[in-house]
Image (cartoon, rainbow, N blue to C red; front, side, top):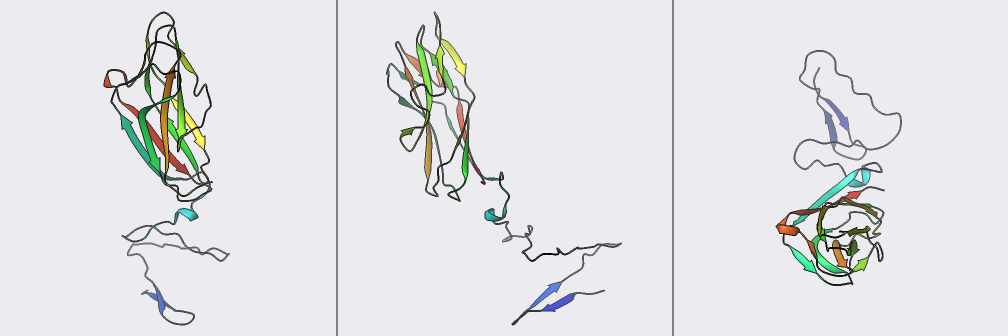
Length: 185
């Protein structure tokens, strides 16, 4: 059997070409109207708007490996930041990070997340490292789900502060990472 040619409603044609395989191949058409989503050759892409809720639409990753210190009791930047431009204003952004921090001896060291210059987590942030009688190195797993409600470029950045003494981020130039995932909502 050869190609099947369908005449367009107003002009043009659509050609269906059977696969060159032995045996029988069946294509079942849906009982409802709609559009086929295809992948394959260059130029064919699945429209992000066609993906179901919970799909990952894009991923952005950044690293920081420069040691930063602070004696500040107010939040200062760590230098660990990434920027994402959501494709939809209903998307969620999942922030995953593993910042390396060293708390000052017998002091509270807090780590928080900023978006576009605003602290998302308040005064305590992700909590604190209290190093007891000595400085303590810690790699922290941080997870946060944000609803930016925008399609503009949005920057997420980690900040830290200490209640006394000196705290360090990226101790010994260890690498910290931040990953931003746009999730369809």
